[in-house]
Image (cartoon, rainbow, N blue to C red; front, side, top):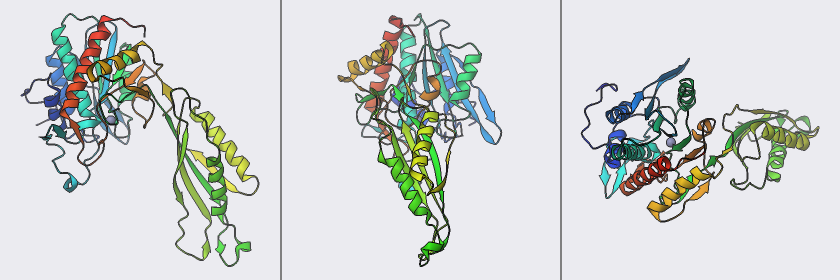
Length: 400
Ligand SMILES: [Zn+2]
């Protein structure tokens, strides 16, 4: 089947479980579209959404298919964002179920992308369709912004899709991003921001020589230990109201010395910092450079380089929209979710340049793992939460 000619639907698109199954059965490992966006497009256009499928390119990278769909022509515009691409399944023999069969066993749906994030996207699409069927004259607009390039280089995905929509005059008031945010149960957590990420590469120069004649050599490991200890000695900060303290982790330390009687000539280390809203990549790099300078004095010859990063820390102020999402979760689960900024980066860091963004989705425990899975009950809960949010959102105009 060509990805652009999906078969007629053989399921009800307001059923989040059936829609998740249909999406999981599309093998959309980045950068392959796998039929997933075609399926979503067919489902949404059958319900009256205007669907577009921009393809973005970059020299040396695979072309990426994306999807933008909207129903309604007026504000407010609530945009629901997500991705249909998935990471590779890994060792197929290790899976207890076919990763692209979407089998349901004892109320659990198995498959690559089940929780990250075809399940979340399917539940939100199902909710939007149900809401529009029940309220065909509803005010405002619902839009879907879906990329096929979140798990890959993320170059031909959300960044370009947002710019593309902006150029066409699309304006968004609020965004719900359906990444899996819950650690264990559906009432655990919504995300109102993300930490930034900065990677540094440090090298220390020494002089190679015989371990028995250390006065003729200079061991770079000694200098490296001193520098890393200085980076680790004082916390970067104590955290802020909505963020944990910034954290530096040394991720590798390499000398590459196979001999036991040779002092090596160079030591290299890489570290990654997940930082909060007290820092920008620039101020943080300056602080790291200051600590290194101080620790090195004239004794250690070193070089430090930082990788370019587009992962800045951001916070969506807990205002009426955040409260509305939290209330919808509480109404359907009986428990108020925590507002969190933990975890890795996400496409929310690009969306926040256009409108306030809140992340909420299914339980993320098995994302990227062997036997990735989602409870079918959670898909139903997420459908109900999204439906409730849509009802409240379009009944209660918010200042964006
Ligand atoms: Zn994801």
